[in-house]
Length: 297
Image (tube, rainbow, N blue to C red):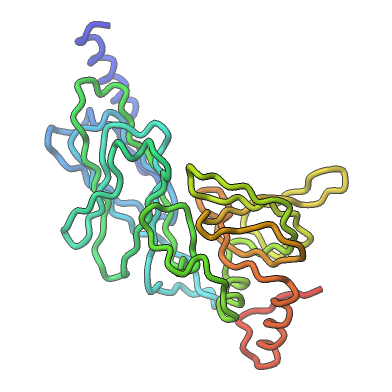
């Protein structure tokens, strides 16, 4: 196709795909509408969403102002720390992503690294800090096949127990067993609380992840249908991920699995044996120190 005709087609497509962020959660736009060397300012106001930048030219500056989770009383609370994670698309091309913190840029995801696992990058900041994501286009002779796209998640309740698939978020403490306080809080605040047995554990060396196959005997809570009935007896089953370095092994007995939903996948937080949890919960209840009520068998 002649270069002039190709540019005309791109310009026509750009008109149809003009920038938008109607739901304040996601943005989609084209670099063809930007002036050379310009920086387009974008603000999104959700705890999760996506960005898709077609034919990247110039730069984007993305500010995130999430509406984070509510407190146990139903009133908004200001988290002590906010954690954000981005997951690049499989065909991420044409840009690099920097973390801008108080005016200083730090490379978060290069164009080359976007094609390699892990595809998730996480970072944290204090509520009073000024942070943004800065997307800088890279030079290419042909931009027609370049799309820089990623999904993002922000949470104010991820803590040292979070063990998501990040190549740059500190994992100190994520593999140690939860203490009693952490177990009680995890049961009350996690995205899922599942009682069940470990069926198998498979390891993915490339992703540095372990996948725990769980047969659920009781679903105390799950935000989405992570565990669904399978087989003729309708028993619920599902998978939970954790870091490979934690060295999870299959074991007998019943466990209480808790954790977070992360880009559509269940990630482990605490997993005490159920009999141990019962004792911890009963002790806390008698001392009037249990943070929430849990229905026991």
